[in-house]
Image 1 (cartoon, rainbow, N blue to C red):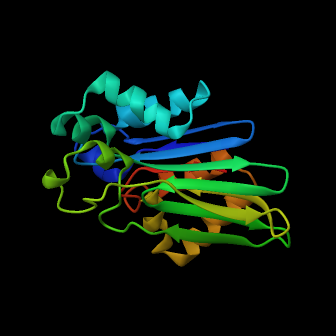
Image 2 (image 1 turned 180 degrees about the horizontal axis):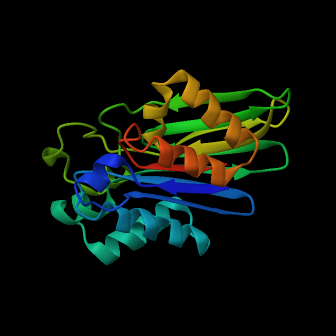
Length: 209
């Protein structure tokens, strides 16, 4: 199930949705473009497309830098996006990520858990590896992919989401309805809920579960 909805602020300012989401058998991806990048959704969608061709994440970035260049402006405008990937194996769900977002886990005993990934207001972008450290105020050592493992002994499914869902969390009753619909697999109903609460959902929301 892939859900991709533009946020209220982007609609109000005439911006594109800067998120991208994609899934294939055994692999899920969510990318969230930086709002300060003029075309960060292009890089995010291009990255997902390259994953679809079978490229590993690091090699996909090499392809993107070859296409857009490695000037500070081109990296800011096209390549600053967070990356969340979930690969399913026989025994576990393997999360690989760089930046912020959320893990959505359904446990074997039927609970639905939400875990926020670190990053906060200034998430690390993998593209910082291609920027002169002197030009960065944060993450001068670059950024790297991190990995977490979720055993199938405890989890029946692991999904991922961009940080836009944080606005829904501010209204507990709405968030409870939202997670219930996700757990039931009702993608259309989730989209209708986001449409209904459009002004609450200030940022883009992408969910792959």
